[in-house]
Structures are given as C-alpha cells and as structure tokens.
Length: 223
Image 1 (cartoon, rainbow, N blue to C red):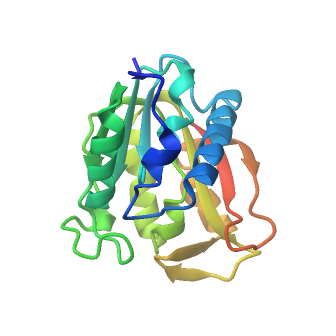
Image 2: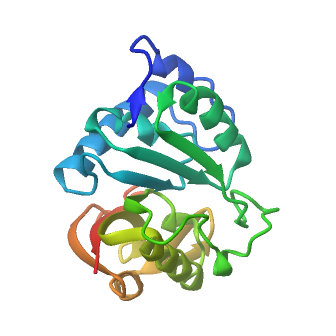
C-alpha cells in the first residue's frame, strides 16, 4: 500500500531542496498537489486500491496529494534523471509503495541527449499494469501529433480495461499553434481525434482563456 512511513516529514522543506526540473515555490506546489489529488478522487480518475502511473512525474509533487487515498501503488516516470534521483532520495525513502523510473526518451527541452526516439517510445511496463495514468503538462511538451499519438497508444496499452487517464493540453483556439517542445499547442480537433481513438472523454475543464498556464484538462476512460 501507498503509505507515508512517518508523520513528521516537513514536505515543504523537502521540496524546497529541488535543484532540477520544474520547481515552483514549495508551499504553492504542495497546495496544488492536494487540490489536484482531491479532484482526481472526486472525478473517478483515482480510486482506493488502484495502481497509478504518473507519466512525467517531474520532482514527484503529485504523489503528496495522493497519500490519503489508500492507493495500492504509485509509479513515477520522467525523462529528467536528476528529478528521478531526487524522488528516489527524498520520496521513495519516506513512502512505501512508490517507485520512480527514468525514461531515457529524447525531448528538445527536457532530455536533449535521450537515447529513445519519442516517435517510438515504449513505456517499461507490461500490458494492463495500471488503473490510471496521470499526464499533467506532458502533451504540452511533445512537439508533434505523431509523438503524442505514440504516447497515447502506450498509455492505452499499460492501462487496465476501463482504466482512467488525466491529460492536459494547450489547444488552438485560443492559443497560437506551436510545435515548440517548451510549449506545444495543437488544434482542438486534432487533440480530440487522437485521444478518442482509445478513450472516451467524460469531463473537461480550463483551456479557454489563452493565458500562459491555462491548460485544457481532459478526464478520460479507456474504451
């Protein structure tokens, strides 16, 4: 089971020691994690006893918002080796039931020396391994629809029947189209075309204002 070993961990202090990857103020980051964790539970993305894959886990902040959900396991996957090292040192050492894995896939922004081509990415897990996959701010950095489609195919493969997917995107409109891996924007119709091949979208929020961090969040279930 996913459980914190001791209750006296100062997570704000832990996350203030991040040196690589996305590192917003620790207090703000943890508050967002708790809010998102509640939303995942209320929307049926996560469920008690479930096995969760956090694809693009970064420095693992999302894990903290899931600790009270009685999950069976949490696996974080990321292409930044230093972030995975941080997670193993600071999180896996304090929380049972969590694992962090480095995915050596090429990305112009996050892993420019990655060995695996993103168009051929293979997630290092067996078929039907997870009850849900979280992909916050992943498709916003994948540059092309081909790469995004490949990721969705692999996500569908590792999800159990009826498994859930949370994904976030920058869409056009309202954003200007972009194939920059720092901030990728796809046409809304193209996003729907590639996502609904294997998933049914049952909820969405955000992504209407065109503000820099305003992502289109989609809650989906595997067909």
